[in-house]
Amino acid sequence: TVCHWESFGSGWMTDAEKQLKLPKLRNLGAPFGELPDLKSIDWNDDVVFTWNGTTSGVKIPNGDWIPDNRAGLSICDATSAAFAMDIPWAKID
Image (cartoon, rainbow, N blue to C red; front, top):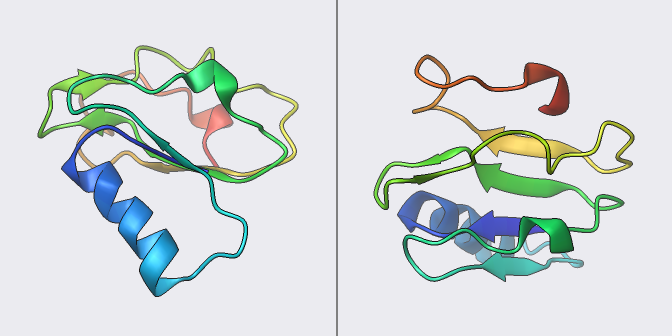
């Protein structure tokens, strides 16, 4: 699953689909500036997302939506958030 709502996340979706050609890929997008339905994620699969959508100004509010007992990986692009936001590092693989 790739969650995206701005240009960087959309870039991750493009890479997963066209460059990596992942066979089982869910596109969980939202309109620019809005978050997708994070509760609809199947955490048996790996999930890719950006923590902070710098181009849209939308950020993940907290890590409550990431379960502690997930089977899939939580792959987060936290480049712009790492030093400015409180990120629950134990939930990021």
